[in-house]
Image (cartoon, rainbow, N blue to C red; front, side, top):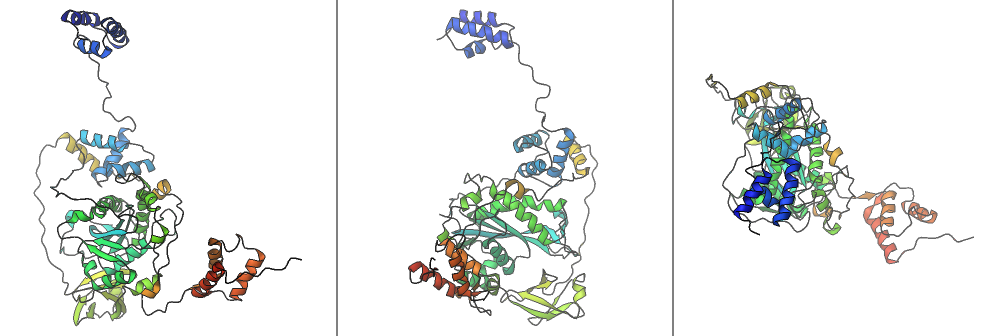
Length: 533
């Protein structure tokens, strides 16, 4: 119903100066009189009613105090933690804040992280039909993280590290990442160098069953997708994948978005890398253990693309499509190529008719006149890897120290704005002593039911070690129970039958035991039963 000018003037006179409950009561009477909605009355009287006062604490953070907020800002400004990662860390240390609220605070105080934008080409997304059909793999160099002389993980600011930097020749950490294309299950490890041994070791750890049920994903894939990395093109890696029944696929040059899932994984893992700036890991293994705990958390929460947890989606895999890895000893035959070489007094090693010089520092100087293990790429005669104290070090041919001169920028005195003064204050504060690792598995980890896959046919691989699998009574008992050929637990007759097969031996060949199982299943053999009294 359309109101006349006289009606509108009457509404404005009746509503003049009213607020809160009085305004509501009068608006309902007028709405009933003129047969309109209450919102129409408020609309016409908007200019004659007092405006609502803004709260004094509008926009303030009510869940945490200033001191707690400053602690959060330390990790954002000094260590570049994202709001999502920082919210989880803060919760583990007794502070609760929503990531969206924290991002809003950063925008208001002009301390938010930069969001780099790039022009991207159109692309077509794709997804594997089922888990373990295709895995994406890639690696990146964490230039600011290195392995120190005492075996601990050291940190060096990015602006202090550049190519051919003189002095510091400590091995840099490399991050190898693998993503299951269907379930988005993510796995990664820190390694020393980007080479075949590092990739093969990471693949074996991902493809093998884990000791904890909190990480249920395992199994060899059919397709391995990557860019044209030197490892993918190496003869050793190609031969190993062929023996394992894995087809290698690489995308075209300049189309990095083709493997966007593993590239996105690097952004997630780079958040964890920042932990090493704050927490000192004593060994590389300790850093990988903390990373594994972090991955349990990331794979147990809802993924934005598939709307379910990656582990939950992976559990839908068909057992017929779940392929087990061969034994570790057989797996190593596929890619290990090494030899022993003597370290001379000038720390040189003779390889390919060339002299490779080890760095003049501990622990290398302790191995003069001793033999060490040396690995190398096939047909690559300018780069070797030496194994010293269970650590791998990259050595380049004719490696010589380079001299360089640095120049400090000229200091400029100027009056800083308030938000930069605040940033400087935060940078000077001490980092809060918070628990950064070890809580992801406790918070997100679940006891997944183990999936049983198909045993790998090790006859595909030939090596120096003969293949002969032996199994125990316990293995035979579980096999018979899984096929409902004996009771659980076994009866006295069934236990005596199993004891008779082994005849005092601890282990028998698996092929012989499998033959007995097949005969029992087909009815060609019966378990002897004692006559009833």
